[in-house]
Length: 97
Image (cartoon, rainbow, N blue to C red):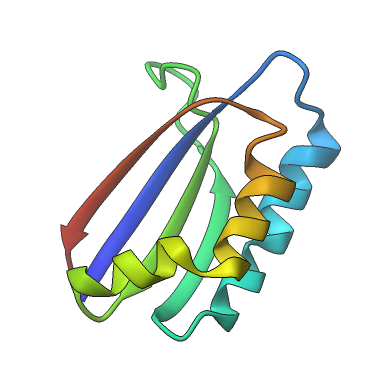
């Protein structure tokens, strides 16, 4: 299994409502066949977090499953609606679990 973790640093204009929408609507990614599970949550680390206040956790069966996931229209819609409007920066990390 592969964990695809994305840390999000919100921009100055991001509202609490938008950040809540990010966490709530991540479940739409469960509709993508390659996704085993999807979750988003605020980062509880308040020190040394570099401004990355929210985390997305997606589980895949294999590393290769991430490629079609990234191209999936549901993923693209999620990014366009809930990530890009609030994102200053992001970091993705994939690792085996």
